[in-house]
Image 1 (cartoon, rainbow, N blue to C red):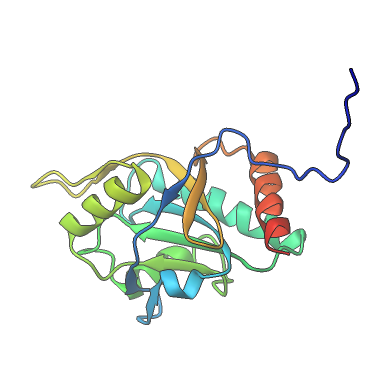
Image 2: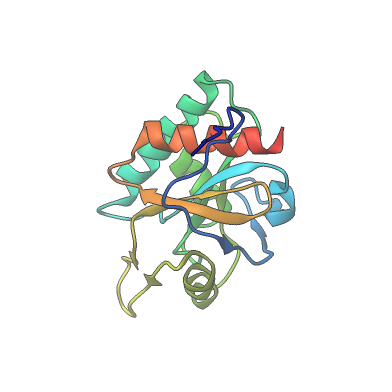
Length: 183
């Protein structure tokens, strides 16, 4: 039996998913509209946080800042970061901008989003990211998962990772795979 190996085989993302994201347009930390159309043709990493979180959100945001530095060091343009607030009635654009300033001074490719009602972000996260978000009544803390999501140039989630124990090298490798697929 003869076996021919193709030296041109392209790398693929292992343990991937294929979850399309519905169109959206929210408000970023500058008070400007920002949505899926602004991310078309770009690879992006998404997460869910809120600014008065007492537990996981500060380390998750610090990890996103590290991802931002890593993609910058690797020269990976066309990569954006998106942080959806899960407490939109509290997290105004100004509050999000102040929160972001604790982690980075560079927001050219990092978008903190708000401008929707609580029930909407809960439904949006569940339907698009398979991700639970819930704000109990009479509580200022929001219950939510701790994943981050890699989204391709067509707005499809291709993989998710722990946002607390980020596999940085795997994430960077997966980003590079997506960027090469669009070349």
